[in-house]
Image (cartoon, rainbow, N blue to C red; front, top):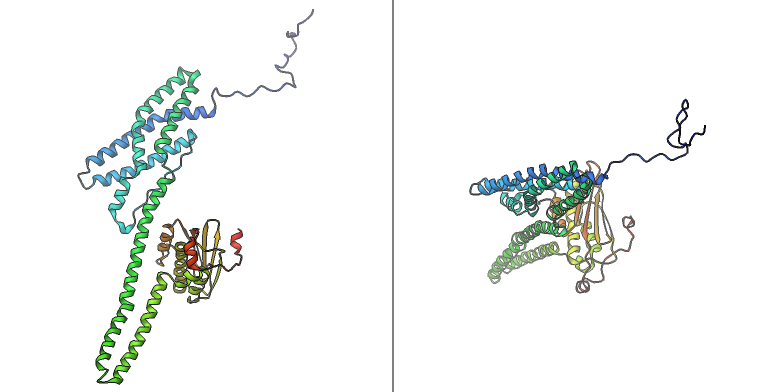
Amino acid sequence: MTVSSGAHTPGTPPPPPYPPDAPLPPPAVLAFGKQTWKEVAQLLLDFPMALIGFVYAVLVVALGVGLSVTVVGLPLLAAGLMGARQLGRWERGRARVLLGVRVEEPSPLRAARAQDGFFPWLWSTLKDPVAWRTVLYSVIRLPWGVLTFAVTLVSLIVLWPVLAYLARGMSNVDRAMVRGLLFPSGELERRIAELESDRGVVVDTAAADLRRIERDLHDGAQARLVALAMGLGLAKEKLLEDPEAAAQMVGEAHGEVKLALQELRDLARGIHPAVLTDRGLDAALSAIASRCTVPVKVTADLTERPAEAIEGIAYFTVSELLQNVSKHSGARTASVEVWRSGQRLLIQVRDDGRGGASLDGGTGMSGLAERLGAVDGLFTVDSPPGAGTTVTAELPWRTRTAASGARAGSGSGSGRENPRKRR
C-alpha cells in the first residue's frame, strides 16, 4: 500500500513539525509596539492627573483671590503658585517618559535677597509666568483628560483595531499642550530673570562704590585740605608778627599737601589705576602683587587686551583676592595666572595657606561672585582645610574698541605660554 507524503504510519513516532535544519518561527509579540502602549498609559493617566491639577488650581486661585483683601491672601496665592511649578515639573517628567517629549526645565525662580525683604519675593512669585501657565494647563486639561480616558478605555475593549491610530492622534494633542504651556519661553526668559537680578547687583555695587569714594574723600583728602586752609590762614596772620612761626606753619602745610596728594592718588588708583590704562593687565597685576605681603608670581598670557570694562573687573578681582591672601590665608607664597581661552578670560589665584575659604565666609568673595555674575562671569572657590585656596574666575572676552585701544597703548602680554591654555 502506498502512503502519501503527509500521512502518518500507525506505530511510528510522528515527524517533527519542522525539518531539523529549518529556522525556528519568530517569537510571539504584542499586537502593538512599545511606544503605543506608552501613549495608552499617558492617555489613561490624563484623567486622574488632570483632576488633581484642576482641583489644586481652582483652590489656589479661589482662596488666594478671595482672601486677597486680608493679609494672608496674596502670600497664600504665591505659595500656591510655587506648588503649581512643582505640578508642571511632574507633568514634564511624565511627558518625557511616556511621550518622548524632551521638555527643558524652566529657569528657577530667583529668590529675593535677604536685604530686599518679603515684598520683592512676593511680587516676583506672583508675576511668575511659568506658574501661571501651569495653572492654565491644569484648568484646560480636565475636559480633555475626561475625553481621552473615555475614548482610550472604549478602544481597549471595542475599537481594538484602531487603538494605535487613536492613541497616536490624542497623544499628539498632549504633546502640543505640553510644548505650548509647560515649555519655558527659552533663553529669553532665562536671560530676563538673570538680568533682573544682575541689575540689582550692579546698582548696589555702584552705590557702594560711590559711598566708599565719598567716605574716602570726606575722611581723607577733604579733611586734610580743610586743615591745610586753616593752617595757611593762621600762617598768613603771623607772617608779619612772627615770621619764624609762620614759616614753620607753611612747612607743616606743605607736608599736609603731600599727604593729601598721596591720598588722592590712592583714591584715583582705587577707581581706575593709571598703570592699567597705560600698560594693561600684566603690568597692573604685577604692581598690586608687589604690594602684597606674600610673594606672588604673576603670569599673564594675553596677546591682546580685552575691553576696558572686562580689564577693570579682572584687575579689581585679583586685587581683592590678593588682599584676602594677605589678611586671611596665612600663606607663604601665592600665584596669579591670567589667560584667554576661546571667548573667555580666565583668572586663577592660588595660595598655599590654611584653606577653608568659602563664598559665605565673610571675606568679600560672595560680592566678587555677584559682580562677575552680573557680566555673565563665573566664580569658583576650591579651598579644602589645610590645603590652600584656588580661586578661578571667568569673564566673557570682549574685544577692545579701536578708540580705547589707541588710548591704552600697545597692550599687555608677556608672550609666555600658559600650560593651562593647551588643555
